[in-house]
Length: 238
Image (cartoon, rainbow, N blue to C red; front, side, top):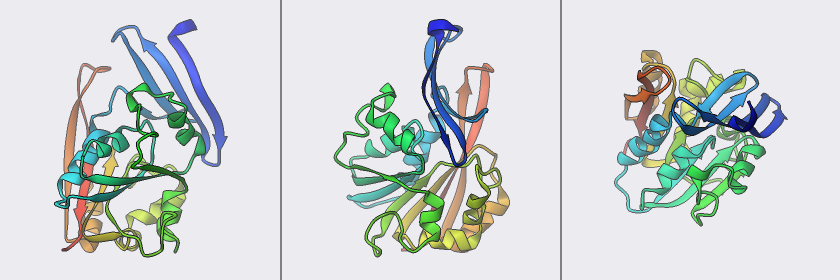
């Protein structure tokens, strides 16, 4: 493909080979950044709307002036950058299982995420988000630290997970462990590639005071039509 395609990074990981690619789309006349896990596409810079809305919808539920936020899954950085756009955010802890993904941002390989790694509010933690929630240590912070919001974008959906070890998180017991890391009135928000799932929404309402599934439509330049993702937002009792 010559200059139209470049593999910026590649590494074998315990869940497969992850790669970052940049290509020039001749039809759209734009540079496209894509993340793949083996042969499966995880994310693309063509479709950032729902990742941005994950932060916007989640933080919109909060009334505090100083917010401590966790982002689970760094990826291309859209959710983390959108969180930092909220001036109320005083700290952003980004939990990412793959060191290489963190390195992409530290090396400045993603121009649309410029400034994320350098922002003094940002701290990257190389850890498995799901193991951190299931364990007793939390997110590499003080054992009693609580957060105002946790924004999660790792799996395709609660039913379509990247690794079987993630599945228990989406059941009520796993969600209760996550809720224990939130402050009163705190928010958990989740990105999903699937339509709203009534069973998962019921699991959220079993643990949280309120839960809602937001359908986020966006223009799909590949099809010329519209596609949609789902953002779940669940809130603790005050």
